[in-house]
Image (cartoon, rainbow over all chains, first blue to last red; front, side):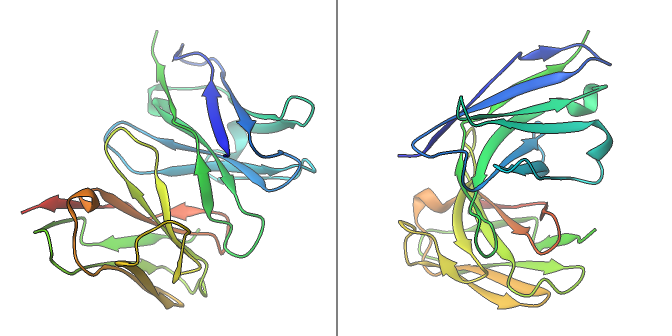
Length: 119
Length: 106
C-alpha cells in the first residue's frame, strides 16, 4: 500500500520560507514523479510543481521564482521550499505521486497539512 | 498557460439521477485529462485518467469522454457517497486544474 505523509510547521511568518517534507512508504521515490499541490481554504486545487527521481523538476510558472522541490532517495522523501511567503500562501498542502506514463495522473495523495502564514 | 473551465460550478441532484459535468480546455490537450473527486476534509481521489480510463476500484457508474478541448464526466446513477466536489486536470502542458464542480443533494 502506497502511503504519503506530509510534515512541517503549521505556522510560518510572512516573508519567511515554508518548508515541508513528504515521507513515502510502499513505493520508491526512485520511480514516478512526485508533486506538491495546494488548496487555499474553501478554494480549488493549485499545482505547485513536481520532481522526478533524477532530480529534474517542473514548476508552476506563477510560483517558479519562489519554489524549490528536492528529493532524498536515501530517506525515500521529497521536500518543498516556498520562499517569501504571504497570507496568500495559506493553504492545505498535499504531496502526491504522479504516474510516469501517459497523462501522469495523481494516483496517490497524502492527507494534507495545513500551513498558515501569519505573524 | 492552459486554462481549464468547468461547468456548472455547482449542481443539485437527487440519488439515482444521471449527471454530467463538463470541462473545457483553452487549447487542445488531446486526451491529457484526468478527473478527481474530493470529499470535505479529504484529499482528492483519482477517478478517471486519459479522459476515459477508469482508475482501479472506481465504480463503473463513473465514465469520462472527450478529446481535444471538450470533456465530460458522467455519473450514471448518483449514490449518496457521490455528493462531493469534482475537478478536472490537464497534464498536456505542465499541470492545471479546473475550478471545481460542487455536487449537492437536492
